[in-house]
Length: 179
Image 1 (cartoon, rainbow, N blue to C red):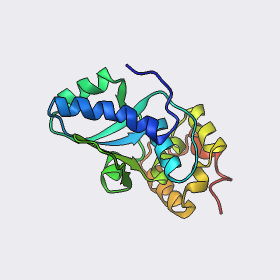
Image 2: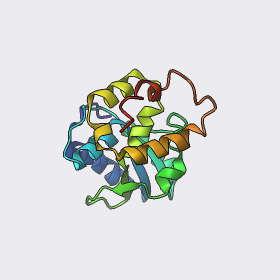
Image 3: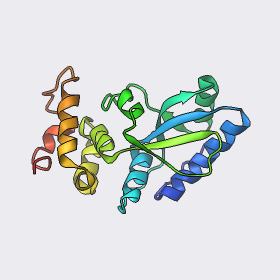
Image 4: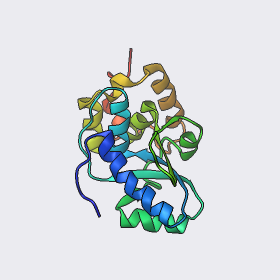
């Protein structure tokens, strides 16, 4: 279990290297999407920006030839599989190609990071204060194509059981989301 802060793409890739080595040793092949703080570090740095340090790695598992083994490896490395916590964007949007592959020398894993608009939506549709602070105090929204982001927000709102829930971070950001 590694509880060191990650601050750069190199830190994230180093942690993913451990995953790759264990997967290769166990004959496991994995395709995953990097979410949360680690995903933000990568996405922001790819755009020449910084993001706050994070300790954990959150992923959405797209596919594996041995899900049971990969989940054991995730547990060993303290990698959290996100299921049911991030409702929006839906899994199929991560699978639909709205992501960028992280180029590295990985042998057994393929790691993708969502486009910045998808990552922003994971925070916009959250009710967590920490996500709102990230949206307000970093350049996440500045990097987004606002018209694309607004279209995504409208689409995802239509899937919500209670789209008018005032606790959604979305409603604290109305002024930032207009031209």
